[in-house]
Amino acid sequence: MPLSVRELNKSTRYQHIVSAAQRLFLKLGLDSVQMQDVANEAEVGIATVFRYFPKKDKLIVAVAIQNLERILPAFEQIAALPKSAYERLEDVLNYLLEDQNSPESNSSKFQEAFESYASFTKEPLPDMDDYIEIQKQISNSLIPIIEDGKKDGSIRTDLSIKEALITIINTFGTFVNNVVLKSSISFKEEDIEPHIQQRVLKEILLSYVRPR
Image (cartoon, rainbow, N blue to C red; front, side):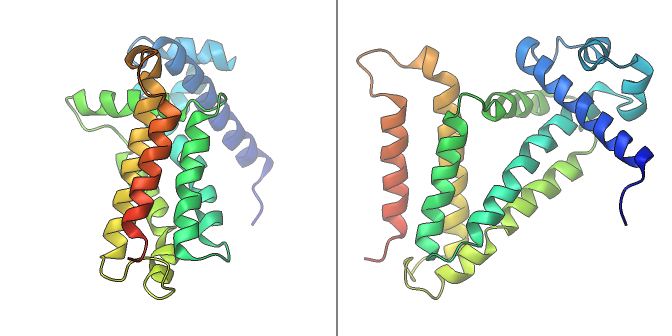
């Protein structure tokens, strides 16, 4: 059933507040941003912000969920491609590499801040079940690759394919994020450039699953 105008406006306003909050979190840091700052940035009343997000932590998690939701359709599209499991795995790694190196992408910066914030909170953050559910959906979107990898011969048959592929994707995604975030402070002229390290790690991980 189509959304009513009221529901559509509510959804649009919700997304508008979340997007405004993300801009502020990236600019000022999660701890520094106040709910009034978000209301000002979103150009809505403070009561409207609190109607959707009674606590700032709820808003922080909403931004984190929005970041993950952006990835899900891309993974689903790659998993559905008429390619071998190995080729689709390489496409997933290329997507992570291109996405995190894109000048327009701030997802890695926010993700790093969010994970650090969540690890130091005294109380569990609200709506973390929803955040975890999106993570599960992303993992499940890779099932076609995993299942095809068991039978198309493009991936080693002596591996636990699910464990190998999920580990490879998580490892590569974490490394790419880390290199992008720390490139301005961790790499000097004599060091190997971040994009070279990313390419080398991608080849190492892919070579592990190629049939011997």
